[in-house]
Amino acid sequence: MELLIELQSAYATQFEAAYEENLPKFQSLHPEIAFEISGTTYRKLFVVDFIGGDHDGSGAIEIVPNPEALRGPAETSIGSMQVVFSALAWDSVRIEAQPTMALPEGFDRWFNAWLDVDKVPESGQLMTGIIHSVVQEGNALTVDFGSAPPSAAFELFDLYRKDGAVTLTVSSGRHY
Image 1: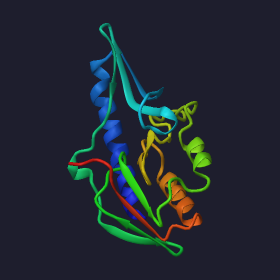
Image 2: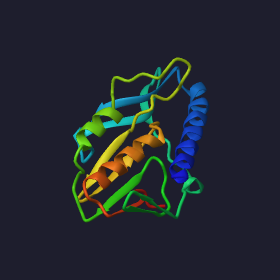
Image 3: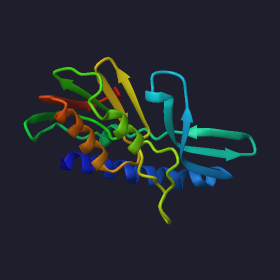
């Protein structure tokens, strides 16, 4: 799963660069702020990359990886489950299982662990290590893994395996 490690590393590098680039533009810049929003996000929770504020107000800043940040294709196995990756970016990972299933057993526990709105960065760190959102579209999930480590993806894939998935198709939820 070297692919996921590369994706997360590329995202973290871009996140830190975006913070440094935006810092002089605002009186205050706050990373990874959670909001409750309407729409199709799971539990209506969404974590924005940054909130920048100045005398004119505040606004959300979202990082959009350039197409060069896409990685794939690749294939691997987790136990007896085949995982097929096409080009994808860390902040928009679309997961579809065969046989189809809406959410794997244990998903709520996984979600609560990885989207912890009360988590703060460790001393000297910019990122908190949390996912930013999940959108369920029929039998597919699109996850913005945000600043979460690759283990967040490994754990989610393993939930699918334990729930009987034979194949996971993992692609980008974003269309370039």
